Length: 323
Image (tube, rainbow, N blue to C red; front, side, top):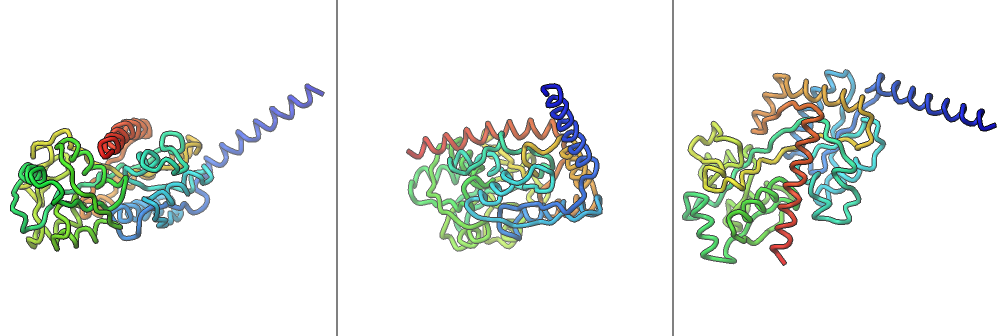
């Protein structure tokens, strides 16, 4: 009887292995859903649709972009974390995918336990800006003015755990300054209030800020980029502006549930990498000022772990400093 039971168990295990292998070989055999945990029309949505369109053509299989915003991106992120780990449900997210459980202890998921990064990254280049009428010319001048006039300066925050939020937290920690945090549902409404001088400081994605910089309604102080950008050659990077420790350039990644089979994640990674190298996607991402880079799974795992440790430290330091 024991022998018969053992044989049955071995048979079941072999069947399960064969089924997994078959699933990986036939992947993708149905549409993939790419979840954007932010409102439609933003930078993440642009990146998602650029990559999804190219992967769809490559695989001859639909990659459907779905927006599931809310709760500082936790609704969409939690949805993917709890989805079936078969490679058919993806998440695209910025730093919130790494830090939100630190900000929201009851988020219901943990990044290093529940997710595996399988593609991109695409770096979100942004710029620190102030109203045109504010009498400062450099980031150091603004920091000095904010320190000299405590309580007079507001920062437009498009969401806790967002790339903008974390870039600002890091800068404020390094500079030793406090600004009043004003929450917004995204960058555009904050930008409107900055132009109207209701708030005095914002970090904005380059693609959103450039038209207003060029028409003179806002003033750039420093870019959160690895090097100066061609559209703003006279604007220093944050490091060049005197705050090298605040030179964090956030990135967006595509994630799947951690239990997704390795063979499937290899296929996803290869498809996303091919998409990033395609002329069409390169052009679309360049137009949006969000350069991308193809990376293998091992490098993505290292990047994810490194930034998880770095960014959760920023959040914890900010929380302790505000008590």
